[in-house]
Figure 1: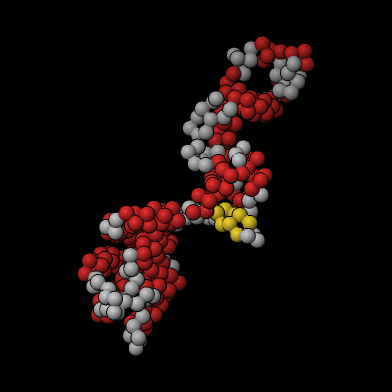
Figure 2: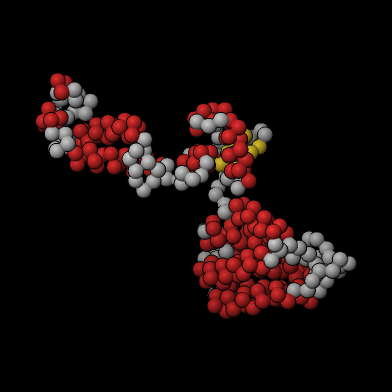
Amino acid sequence: MVKGEGRPIPNARLLRLAQVGLKAVSRARPPEERRTNSACGCPSTGLTSNDQSESLDVSSTEQYIAINRINHIYMSRERVSPAISEFMRYLAAHPEAESSLPALSGLSRELGISLAALREQLEVARALGLVDVKPRTGTRRRPFSFAPAVRQSLMYALALNDGHFDQFAELRNHLEVGFWDEATRKLTTEDKAALKALVARAREKLNAGTVQVPHEEHRALHLLIFRRLDNPFVTGLLEAYWDMYEAVGLNLYSGDIAYLKEVWDYHARMVDCICSGDYAGGREVLVAHMDLLAQRPTPTDASSKAF
């Protein structure tokens, strides 16, 4: 095996690739050096008899360069970790899989694994949000999202101990504060208008005759602020936080309308700071707003209402 920074190439395959590479090296040589000598058995590479007799001395550098280039190309294609399943490796190496995947029977033969093993790997990939599986359209690769994998782990953590929510909420708070300046400076005029609209809609719900918890607006506002980061890991963690927020019931009406109105007063101030370019002031409001969660009233059975 020839090893490198990526996945090693089997010797047999490397030799076949090397032959192709040496042809390319030969074609790159000056014409006078590309003499063919069938007696030495080198017509395919264009190596001269001197090249053949001194292959390890004269052309060893060229061979090394050619093989290393081939190895680099191969590893770039197969740069994914060997620790993941054959199916995940296939997904990562084939962008065309976003349109559709081959039939499972053919794919199992291509990957060299049983159909049962492939089905198991497919189900894991589906749980991690890597693929869509639909009866009529078949299976296709989804754009990468970190959220499904985090969500699965978080829900298990909650099943073990509800206290894990507080720990993850602390991580989320640090993420939002840490990325605040970068995220808010990237927001467009349309984004800022959308933030104002979310605040207006939330206040409309809170001032209605029958109280409606503006949870959808709450989630949408925070995610919108950080949407321009173009960082799937930050976005995935924040999306998973809001799923967890709902799982522990924080999207329910606590029975204290004054508390909800105060929360949205903070949101309105945050948005005003963003729209005026006072990003540092907005970050201060964000931190103060996060402290409200510790003061949140406990929902009562009589007044709780899912939204």
